[in-house]
Amino acid sequence: MTSSVPALLLVEDDANLRLALRDNLENQGGYRVEEATCVREAREHLGRGDFQLILLDVMLPDGDGYTLCRALREEGVTTPVLMLTARTLEDDVVRGFESGAQDYLGKPYRLRELLARVGALVRRSGAAPVKGLRFAGYRLDLDRRKVETPEGTPVELTRKEFDLLAFLVRERERVLRRDEILDAVWGRDVVVDPHTVDNFVSSLKKKLGWNSTSRFAIQTVRGVGYRMEIEAA
Image (cartoon, rainbow, N blue to C red; front, side, top):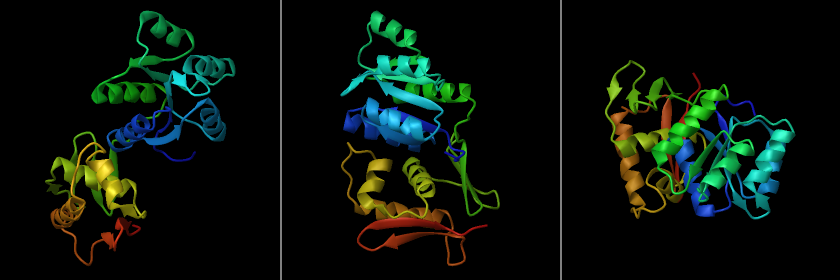
């Protein structure tokens, strides 16, 4: 893995929870997330590359997080581990730390607390979370949720407009379906008219001052969705 974006391995067998976690870690935290649903898949991912953090469920279809974490430590794997589990009795927490985990967070958890713990562990691993994004001279400050034009002029965006822009920039050059955009920006549990995406894209273009000479374009892919295209500097 050569990307400068901190890479996380999320090991969770609950599909809905895994997808929600991935979206929040990518869109709110600025991380790159790979997913595994069991011990076997986790080992396959770990064998292919390096990660700055492993988020590890305890109860998995083909084993448990305690055993996997202990085995990794015995094999010399030093990647920090954050255990995410509904098992929060004192004995369970102690067992997690004794197996080699750096942190232990019980379900259900608060998103801000999860992101704070992830950020602390990533920094401890020597990698810093992404603080900003750039495209066509524009700057997005993910911490302060601010956008500036190439000339340094602030662009006033609503929360959803900012989230949409950040998602489009991260997924640049990829065709994004409207339902995919809705899930990432509005969430899977919120019912939103798909045409809402069209309205927000139109508003973004106006606020960013897009015109035919701009170095970026949010292209409409008829019948599918949108693609952010960015001209090389």
